Length: 79
Image (cartoon, rainbow, N blue to C red; front, side, top):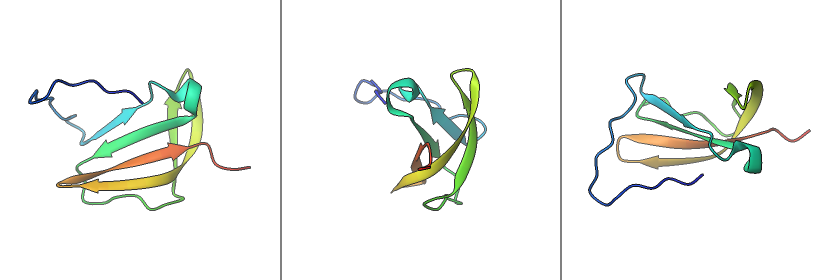
């Protein structure tokens, strides 16, 4: 996932409290979910995410926390 933002620039957060970044899904098979929700997912939890015109079941493979929120990198589960 490539995100470009100039230093000091502000970006409004989604009104739903979640953002899904899937720009590189075709190349990496990954999406990243950002949230300010106090309820972070756990490793291995699965999400159904529609991207690239299809519904995919993805598993949380990595979680990172930051002040006020978290990010979860989700990947296609191992078969």
